[in-house]
Image 1 (cartoon, rainbow over the protein chains, first blue to last red):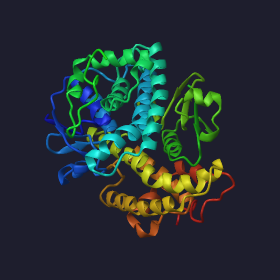
Image 2 (cartoon, rainbow over the protein chains, first blue to last red):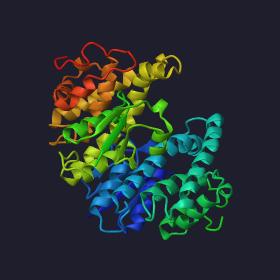
Image 3 (cartoon, each protein chain N blue to C red):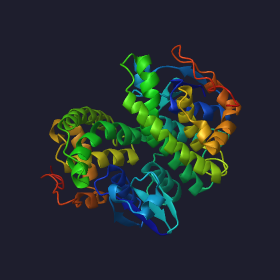
Image 4 (tube, rainbow over the protein chains, first blue to last red):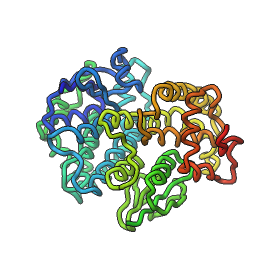
Length: 223
Length: 223
């Protein structure tokens, strides 16, 4: 089975999947693309016009990332990323939605989209009021991550899951902008360091987008 | 196992689940609530502060609706609402995300939230520019529903699925406002009539919210 994952390198949704592909040891072509430059082939694969898209054997395509996660989990033989227990699994799904919907709306769109996406798309200047709101909101979310990390081995419980990857995917994109106040949230920082030092994280730390270098500690394991 | 579903009657996410509970013949207490009046117990069940929330045996709670759908599908014995084939299942999940994310952002938030939620929450007057955008966008989505309904028995393929319930849940809320131009989209209308005449739909047609009656044909099977 030939797998091709089309992704935008600074997309949290693509990053969540790249982490999953690596941990599951799935062989796949990982192909960078930009959501605002999708050609007709990519749009046919996902009429919603978003990335990531997973293409299978040149004929079937799966999107969005939530459907790809479920597909990988149902089909692949590698590491399981939904917990075994039914309620732990529901908790992991709740947290994936927390980051992919709530954190995305309250932080990612306000910081990453304003600072980087707008520049890459040449669609105007960053809105500083929105960025300020994002910088305010991220502290509330880091407080919640700390709360969870203080009480559990991984965010959803005892097992590493998509919840950790969704959270780390969003935070790593904001970290690329230099806007995660890690030192004020030591438990969140400790959890992130454990993820960041996994080999699966390396490709993310090597991403460079549109000639913009990430901030100082972005790729450092000791930050 | 005692199930309690807390839902807001005019929420598409609650409606998707109420349809599923009925079709699966699950015994559950269906309890109306409002997301802007959640008490401490409900907020503890879902820290994101959204409805619906499913409470199980007075102790465990599951949210949001996407996690509840997966839980119901894994645990319950009734009618299956994800298709059997893996790619049909991925297609159904793509369409659920289409309606719960894209349609929600491009139509539901612009019409239902402006017209009804704002009034119930006493949070200002409807923004007419947003409503106009929603009325424009819904035609593009109805065109897509017609395209699918012309080619398939149900939206995701041969089997009735969560994709139909997600789509019908959003459209039924907009229909409560009288803003679905059904007659311009006969294939979409035919698909919706088939759903609307199922017994599972009846409780939705009886919803009345905040003293606002729905528009004329809302509860009629021949509209």
